Amino acid sequence: MTVAAPPRFSVLTTVYDPDPDHLRACLASVDRQTCGDWEHVVVDDASTDSAVGDVLDRSGSERRHVHRRGSNGGIVAASTDALAAAVGEFVVLLDHDDVLAPAALERLVDAVDGADDPSAVDLLYTDHDLLRPDGRTAWPVYKPDWSPERLRNHNYITHLVAVRRSLVDDVGGFRPGFDGAQDHDLLLRVSERARTIVHVPEVLLHWRQSAASVATDTGRKPQAYEAGRRAVADHLARIGVDATVETGAHDGVYRIRRRLTGTPTVSVVIPTGGSAGRVWGRTRIFVHDAVASLVADAGGASRLEFVVVLDSSADPVVERGLGRIAGDALVVVPYDKAFDFSDKIDAGVAAAGGDYVLLLNDDTELHTPGSVDEMVGLAQQADVGMVGAELLFEDGTLQHGGHVYNGTISHALLGWPGDHPGPHRLQAVERECSGVTAAAALLRRDVFDEVGGMSRELPHNYNDVDLSLKLRRAGYRIVWTPHACWWHFEGRSFDHPIDPAEVAVIERDWHHEIRHDPYYNSNLAPGRTDWLERPGRSGAPPYETLADGTVVWG
Image (cartoon, rainbow, N blue to C red; front, side, top):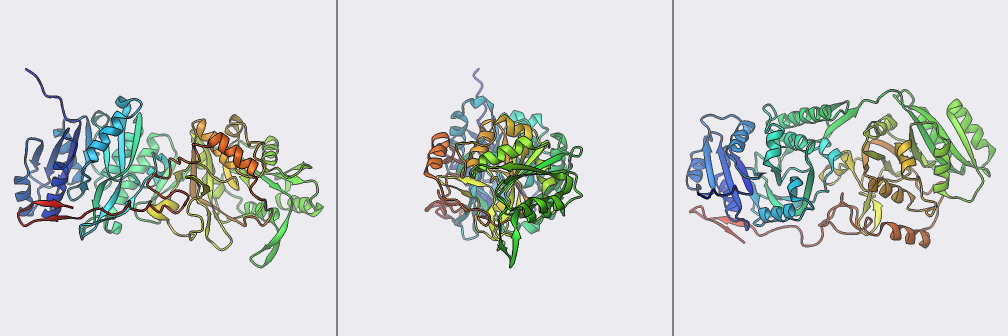
C-alpha cells in the first residue's frame, strides 16, 4: 500500500467572527494557489456569527480541513489546535481576513529549493501590503533581509511567514498567555534555533484593513503589545542579554535597556585641527564643545578617556582648553602630517587604553544623555562589530540613520525630520544596517584591530564604508540605534571634495556590496534613501464577491 507524502505546506487559519465576505476571500486565495502542494487547516474558535459557520460549511474539501472548537479559547488555543492537526513540512500562518497572492506558496517553494542547503531552511518571510476597505491594495511594506536586532524592537516581519514544522514543535509551539503577540513570540523563539532564514522580497500577502484589525489602528490592541513586551524580555533572557524591556514611544515598538557588564572604559578618539566656527549664533572651538558635552554627561556606567589626535599646527589654546575640560582623562596624540582621517583614527586607537573605542568627529555635540552607554550595551554582544548613532544637522533634520548602499553610498532618510519615526518605524528602532558613519561609531578595540582598522588608501572619504564592510565580511553585525544621538555640524570644521582615486578604491574592493544592500530591498528605488518603492510596484487588481459567494478577481 502506497502512503501519500505529506504536503509541503500546512496553511493555518484560525477563525473568529470575521466579515463573511472577507473569510470567503481568504479561503479563495488559498484555493487559487499556483502551487498545489498544500493543505489548509481551519479552526473556528466558536464564532457567534452563523454566517461564518455557513461559509465554513461550504468550504470543506479534500485539502481543507475545518475544525470547530466547542468554546472560544483565544488565538493561541485555536492556533495550537490548528498546529496539532497539520501534517505539512512547513506551517504557513494566514489570518482569517487576509489574502494570499496567487503565487505565494510557489514562491516559497522556489526560495526553499533555491537555497544552498534546502534542508536547512527553517524560516521564510515575505513582503506584504495592506488590503483597503475598497478591495484595492496599497502601502507595500518592503522589508530588509534577516535583521534580529530589529525583530527585538518590533515585529517587522508580521506577514507572510512559513516555519519548518519540526522546529515549531521543538520550540514548544504557540505559548499560552501571549495572545495578540503569539506570532512575534514564535518568531523570536524560532530565530534562536533556525539554521537558515530566508527573506523573499515580494508582496505575497495582502493584510486586511478592517475595523478590528491592528493593520488599521494599532492602538486597538494594547494587550497585544504588552504580550509582545514580555515575549521580547523572555527572548533576551534566553540568549543571555541582561536588559529590561518597556513599551516604546510608538505602538508595537519596544524600548530595550541593556545593563553593562562591569565599568567599561571607552576611549573617545577625536581627530581635529582645532578649528572654530559659528553654530546657533555662537563662535565655538568645535573639539572643546564635543568633549565638554560628553564630560557633562558623566555618571553613566562607562568611564571615558579622550584621545585627541591634534594637528601640531593647531593654536596652543586648543590643547590648553582640552586639558581644562577633560583633565586627567585627556590623551593628546600630536599629528604633524597632511590631513589623513584614516591615519589619524588609527593613531588615536593605537594610543587608546579602553576596551571600546568611540570614533567621533570634532564637529559634534552630544544630544542625548546616556548615548555612550547605549552604544556599549549593544557592542557587548559578541557578534556586533560596530554601533552607529543618530546624527542631526543643526536644524534638527536627520543627517545619519545608518548607511544605505543601493548603487549610491548615502545615509538612510537623509534630511527627514529628526523626530519622525520614519517609514515602517525605521527611525524609531535599533536595527542592522550595512554600515554606519565614523562621525560617531563605537566598537570593541579588539574588533577594530582584527579587521585592520582604517584603510590608508582612503584618507578622506569612504573609510567608514570600508571599515563597515570589512566588519560584515568578518561575520559581524552592524547596528544603528536611535537611542544614541549627537548634533553633527557637518563640514563646519573641515571640508574636502570627493577624490576620484578613492572612488576607484571603493569600487575595486566593494563593487557588489555597494549595490546590494541586504537591509534595503530590491523593490525600492535605487539611488534613494527614503524607502520609496520602484514605479509600478504598488497596487493590485481588486476582487469582488458576488451574491452567491463566488470571488471574482481582476
